[in-house]
Image 1 (cartoon, rainbow over the protein chains, first blue to last red):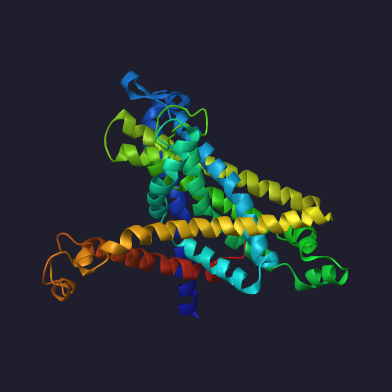
Image 2: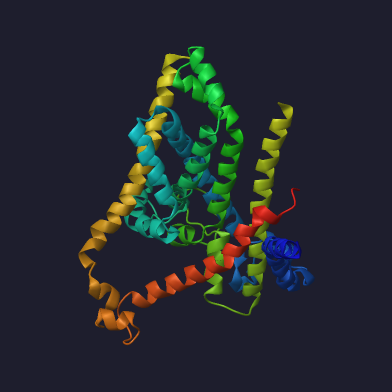
Length: 284
Length: 96
């Protein structure tokens, strides 16, 4: 019995320490960002422009860049992922469904740097041709590649959710003379809404947190972007770029503000999405 | 449900699957197309003797082996650290 209790404690300690690590990271960033707060430059650092020559270290352009790129990536990836999940669970011939499922699993394992690398050679020239200006390194390029990165994760969640709809419901639709598409639209999709929401939240989290693709494909301009063909810099790419060049300056201090902003933005969007799903469930 | 809508849903699902498979094929195909030509032992071991390099008797200077070994060590170490935490999570946590 004592051994059992000890094991439980060790296990609980492992579990709580992994949860505490997340909180500690935030506390660490807040503590190191404090000097800026004390100097009363917090808002300027959070919402001002980035021009170190004039003493402005605002991260607003990077926050906008992060949001634009990940939201656009999500907007492209969600319909494609949902379509793939529908293909796997309803419209595909048997072999094709298994093939796509296997391929999607394989794609989740491809490192992001590979997507970025291939994107530079295949997609950047194409976007440059289409937009007719700039280098082709822009929000659209990064968002397109990002959507390929996050789609497999979402497809797995969506397909899993659709597969877990009770077979009795599906049989009931068939018994009433419903077609497979009617079964999908009227029964399976509404039933799987939690998995779909979870997939979207996870996809967004991955999109916000990804560094390599934005760093390699978005152009890293520090001006606030105004169109999808403008170059932009994400918070993650900004952190990577500054940390590679600097270790002790005001510029470096703002990294902790960037880290906190990234953390809070992601948490906020995830919380809002979860909340809306929960509220919608209560109403039913 | 309208027959046209049904057809649109089917087309949308096939189009989505094609787009994703095409993206994966383009990514992997591009890498293979560009990379297969350079794939040989020299790429990994450089000018060193493969067996001697693997036994750590000879250093590899212009091959990929050090990078492969570094990646492998990093992955093994991080999995070894994460495994106890992950396996303990569901079993020990109170139900709240």
